Image 1 (cartoon, helix red, strand yellow):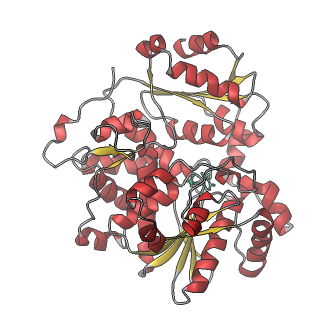
Image 2: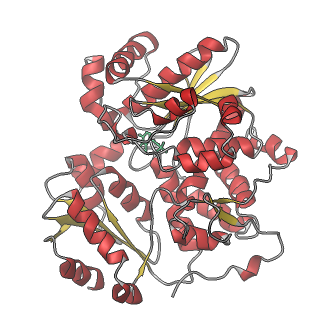
Image 3: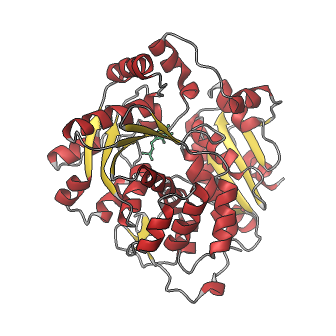
Length: 439
Ligand SMILES: *Cc1c(COP(=O)(O)O)cnc(C)c1O
């Protein structure tokens, strides 16, 4: 039971995938994709990056997202997937717009929040789901995920209608928001929402126990679909190429938590995309901006903020960024500047930008915008782009008081709220979970 060997594509020299800790052997893409982490605890990464040919870069300068994803994805997975298969996969995954919206005379927003859960993680999760399906031999995938809300809805939506896959999303009953429950429990089909009579930690413990259960794993193929997985990371490099449309080397500001988004941007630059500089913009969970400033990396417990998708005190992808720069701080500083902002600054800026520019920021996008302002102050002739990672309606409780007006619900959310819901109820009991999964 497991992934097929991709022997049909043996002509092109295949990229090997290595661990950031260099203490486990290089593997082919398919193994890295299904592995989660490497055996030495590191994260998978390509052995080396071949830049895209200049002719391809030229062509992508005005291309649409699916064309970009096909070219960049086929290049990254050279020899492991055909251009035709990649095109079909990307077209199916990225079937929503990613517009570049002008906000001032030299600032653009790259809006990544028009997917089904209204946040940028749709890009990675939807592509990952289809990559996992592509690289299987028809053996059904079973995805088990514990969630306190947002991750679960992104994974559920990502696998919805993907053939030969089943998803069980475990969430603490009564502890997720109405919108989050609607996004998980109103899908049906191959998605089972499981309301656990316990806490998020109970959900997580049940899922961990399943992954450690060899008997269960003989009967179903449990597939990790976590956020550090390459299948999630690599597709995030695609949308950076949309910035080339501006025809200049822009400064790009990335609101960061686990730093997958920024890692993907740095990969795009390594592939040859002309980006002048990146801003690593964070809330007060600022271990990476602090590292850039002092050279000392000190992970610490996270602090709650209004940009809560970025409340991360020990960012998992930082290891990949270090590996990408061979741990050379000066080289990293040439490409990335850090900036961190507290909640008061963020909320005030949401109000100011709405008043002065008529643009509605969510708290995460606002941090990217703030980081960009700082960077552009030092480079008065540069053009700037900030990544807007969540729809403002997802964070109404922060945005509405900041602008003093209601934020209308987008259609996708309104639809999810109106659909009937169904959840399986589960006590905090491992045998009950096994029964459910094998039913
Ligand atoms: C996850 C998330 C981020 C942070 O992205 P990372 O890749 O973890 O740095 C930023 N904004 C929103 C809305 C998110 O959901």
